[in-house]
Image (cartoon, rainbow, N blue to C red; front, top):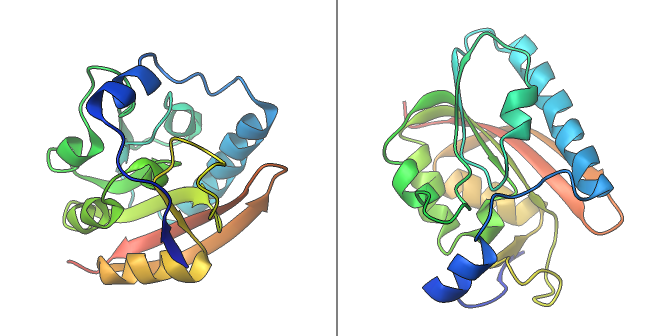
Length: 185
């Protein structure tokens, strides 16, 4: 399943929705999800010693990249902040061995474009997103929902080779975490 949940919000609505930096500590479920993601990425980094640079272009405050114990150089940007650059713009300006894109794709008007652009600039990607979201009323910020098969299709269509998938069942959402390798190189 790949489902468009709603039309794109107006610039005014987006400016209002994302007028302040995101506080990831407000909800226990989100705190648990961040720690879960950090644990999986830490294991991945242990297995992939060649990762020397990491970029986090997620919606949020950078807790995931900040929580990683690594000697890799780190670049982070909360792409949701008012006045900040969009992920579409940032994705064309930086490159790294690993891109973290946590709870972000569902907010984008064209996530396939972002993934296709990223495959040319990053060797690996870590994506987290709700699993099987199909109710447009569940979160007014989300434009997209997909199940595991839908996300695997999008990754393969944008030249990413999935290497690891995991899920976390929380009370509000079940989340999917993907780590994929770019096939561009």
